[in-house]
Length: 289
Image (tube, rainbow, N blue to C red; front, side, top):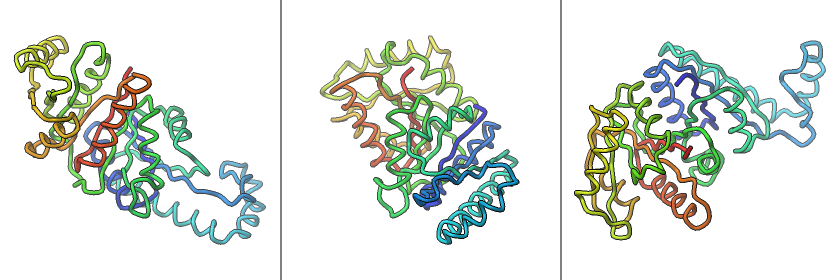
């Protein structure tokens, strides 16, 4: 991991996400980019902060016609600079950007342009509702992102990553490169890794079979120092949530989205949404490759 992207609206949850991203960047020796999006007045759609300096005077004069927007710009620059300085205190290289009228799909394109390896976002935006601003974008980004997304809840306590639990069905056709990425993430953060299989009445299999499957995965992917667990519950999301609550050494949960379509895809998207609402631990979502 080399580059981490942190979209922020400066809400309390987004700020928690920024602080957690700084610690992860410190652990993994990565750089970090903070970006904030501002909705512009319709008349200001032509504004572009990257125009040649010779036009700066005329643009500043035009900006004076929109005092609220000018105030918002100044506040955003100050808040971004504060985050940058906090990162630099941890000896993390940081950059900042302001975007305009950016939506969730733009964040994905921006992440690709910056060659980001990870997107870190809060699950609750300004206003305190999961469906606003950053919160809404986080859910949408998780659905379409080709990059891992780390979602931070408003109940999260910022700390270095030390214990990762990866929950999956561990079927070979679903693992692909995700297990390697999770292994590398655990190595880069020096965190303990545990594999978790949730056994439910709907997708029941014997404990003996589950353990054998997990042992085969550990052998194939050389996870000698990895631990595993098989946990029984009524649903996958309840099983993950209940297991994590009873195992406080885990301070990050990892899952993979499924590249399925139709009803099956909706089912797995729903698990992710439910986990975002249940967990007070960071949720790292890897897209299926």
